[in-house]
Length: 89
Image (cartoon, rainbow, N blue to C red):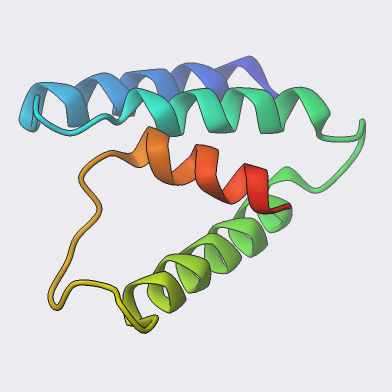
């Protein structure tokens, strides 16, 4: 992955943390760091990231709509969500 993209993700993570310190955005940064390490050389990173982001969003929406999910719930800790999704794979 190009170093500028990795640096930009770190910068955005810090901005999100500064804006909302009660939310664990560092979990998402760790998720992407690990994902970038596994990205095959020459892979179209933008397309792959976009596809996986859409899949991840669908998983979150399905989890929110699942029987027993609290009404109007929101995800308070992204790191916990990422960990749970990775265990499911």
